[in-house]
Length: 184
Image 1 (cartoon, rainbow, N blue to C red):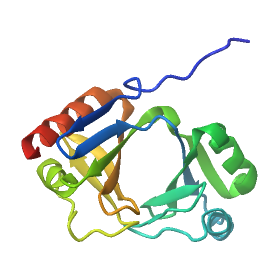
Image 2 (image 1 turned 45 degrees about the vertical axis):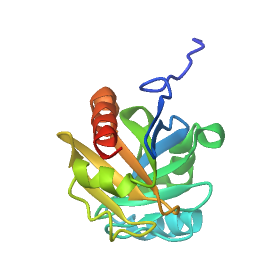
Image 3 (image 1 turned 120 degrees about the horizontal axis):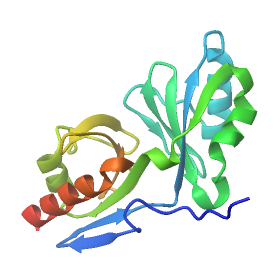
Image 4 (image 1 turned 30 degrees about the horizontal axis):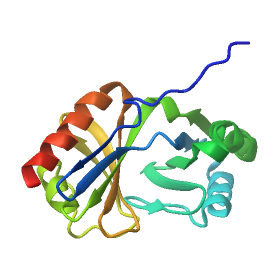
């Protein structure tokens, strides 16, 4: 068997520009869950037990260690620390059985944590989410630099998490850094 080492999209880069810090968070394991026909009830029961609640449209459940957000009708993205949940998709599949389709998404997305006093100004330059009225747990799908992304308001007042396509991690990072320089 091969001894493969996972790598982050950009090497775990961190940039501090003015009051903004942009950090690639390679420590998040991701899996998508889509309830199958007649499996909706079991899927929501499992997610409620796992997350403490089932996120509805535009919302996330920021539970510890697992968290999740709504992606569409009967569809969610679940995340957890890579250190303890490297096989998150397998763990979810064991819990859900045939009630849902579960797909490992860890290698498909890059995760950036953006923090700092000017975070709202930066987000207003990047995309059309109502960042000034979003509260912890609000989640929006949007376009940043021509890339489909998810923006999640975290618990800290100056923290937002952005999930974007891993194949375009460099472009997304460039857009974040350029916007940070604009508001610095």
